[in-house]
Image (cartoon, rainbow, N blue to C red; front, side, top):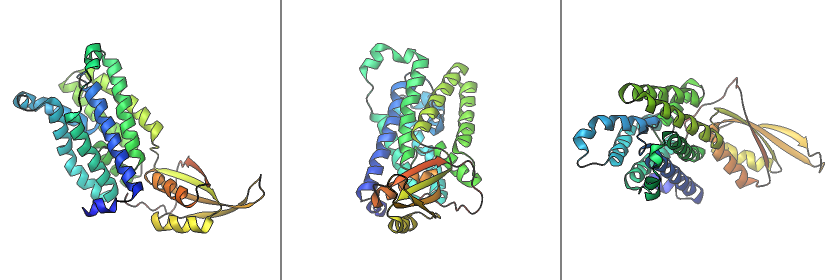
Amino acid sequence: MKTLIKYRDNKKLINILITLAGSTMYSLGIKWFIIPAKLKTGGFTGIAQIFYGFIEPYVSNFMSYDLGVGILWFLVNIPVFYLGFQSLGRRFTFLSFLAVLNGMITLAILPFPGILAEEGLHNDLLLSAILGGTITGVGVGITLKVGASTGGMDIISQYLSYKKDRPFGHYSFILNGIIILIVGLFDSWIYAFYTIINLFISTLVIDKIHTRHNKLTLLIVTDKKDELIETLHKRIYRGITIIPSIGAYSRQEKTILMMVISSFELYNVISIIKEVDDKAFTNVFKSQAVYGNFFKHRLD
């Protein structure tokens, strides 16, 4: 209850709603396109599919495939939630927990459209992999956009990226590669290849929605220098450099604030800027490398 009370203001409630919408889309992509085609997806959902394949002969009489995969998906995430809470922060872990819990429920109860069955879409493995990857990618992307995740591999990849200071995608690719290998060895190499297509499409969509680079540089042109600096320092523990400037058109004195943040902080920083100065101009670009004292903190 204390955690929910902390999320009572509108902005944070919107974050929760977006997280739930993203996890619902993720489950929709899996249930409507991946599972009917007997394909596997990446992450802990893919691991849950593999695990359920081993126990299905013993539980299929009283548990549907979707429900079984959803429950296993949630269970294998429990230790990862603890890892995220210890290293990545309460806010990130809380939202990720909601995403996985909602994903498990929607995977179990979401109805399957009759028109998809009539069209026999599940027989087209390539189209199923592309559509499934696109929809799950949108779901994961908008979830990451508000500083959450769909659990599992995302949390582990975030953790390793945070600890080792290497790109998120580097670890995500390695961990999902292990799943593809397992699918090929224990199921079918054909399904493994279609899983690669599914993950490739999903990654492309995610990258279009959410920047995965660790460090971002912001140049903020504002007329409310002092107020914006004070608010940013209260909510974001980052250094800010003040650059005096003059508008070329107006010839009015301006201030440019330069700061380097992690990609996970971008959503919060932009929200703060809009709150303090809705007329501020902000340029965000990728930082290839950052040298010196760049503080890495938890994603609270």
